[in-house]
Length: 197
Image 1 (tube, helix red, strand yellow):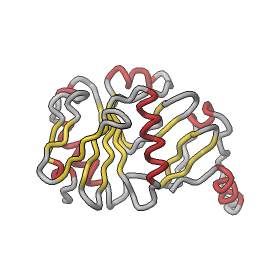
Image 2 (tube, one colour; image 1 turned 90 degrees about the vertical axis):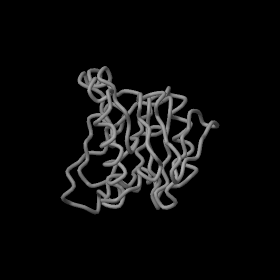
Image 3 (cartoon, helix red, strand yellow; image 1 turned 180 degrees about the vertical axis):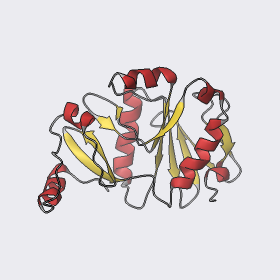
Image 4 (tube, helix red, strand yellow; image 1 turned 60 degrees about the horizontal axis):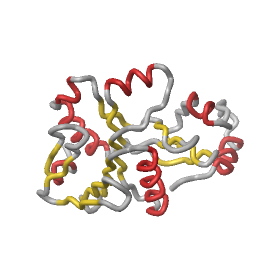
């Protein structure tokens, strides 16, 4: 569930050992790297706080997608699947997809301290996500230029593959789930996304 900056500030005031200064602008947010186990997005000039995706319950999803990606030519060309990267969206907003695809050129841009807009983003629905907030984020991704978003629902083992805010394919079971239009040959059976070690 998202938390507004006022609630975050109160929580920090209660913690006398907190040495972080909350960012008050996008520029400060970009440089800010909290180590408190949460992820933060910059939305409408405010921080929003979320649970991190890489929990023990959800790490296997990232691991399964990464394993497929490591065999892909996009990886050999310098691309990466990156968890929880601060990405630019519309205006002065920044979102943090649970996973996103970063090209070699994107990596060079990031090396100059510039946030990128990924072509492909993945959001993993957790117990604390609100659907209204998730759909607002989805629309923002496409408005910014993201070309494909996977919304993964671990509890029902389904993947909603969006190519626009209104164009969606629901994948489940042995159906093939594909991001081929962005990452050539990046296709796998939906149930393989959810395999636990």
